[in-house]
Image (tube, rainbow, N blue to C red; front, side, top):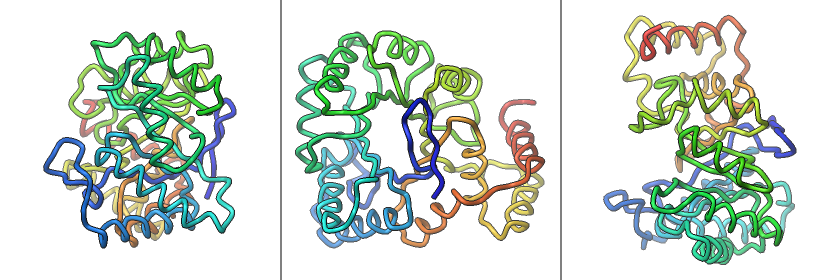
Length: 300
């Protein structure tokens, strides 16, 4: 597994996210705790496989399964305590309903309890709340860094203005931005038209030494591509004896300051996606992917 270091923050290029139907009831917002022990066991096995393959960035949130995801990561970590897991990187997030000063402090401690750890590497705002001033949230997060409860601050699913505000208000600065970013769509985060990833957020992060954690490295891209461009992508994959998903991840990792996390409990998918960190395409192939994804969705 290769790593990227930006302003002192080092992460494996591929990590594993943990909002999945395997631990949540996907029919409810963000999921409710699973009562299926067999599924939970499979979920912990998937985490341990990812870790063993080098995907040692484990990403979760207090809102995933109402904290159940954090508990499962904690159980997986406990089972690894007989081994050397000091190089694991654990990140979690505070939900948008808990962004006032007191709730941030309380939420962080609850997350640590569920994870079974004394501190966490990266603590992020899951999604900003327009009813809570970002400065109030950042004040609490700075205090957590001062107390050595967290090492780095992050923000997710935010537009450039909010990212700038958070970075400027924090005494410690924002170290990571977690955002949906893949080659289709290149410049939009989900349905939020205000979040411009490639044209605004990525350049700002590259200029200011902030790591971009791209989630959903592939979603419905292959369904959305026109047949001619899909064939070109398949030709690139075939040349490198790789899958289209691996090519999509490799394209992301070719961008400065960008690492990726994916979500899966399928063991074969985990092996495939982690292996993408070692896939290097030719410069002209990355340029072709830039071109065909732009043609499909950016009107270039």
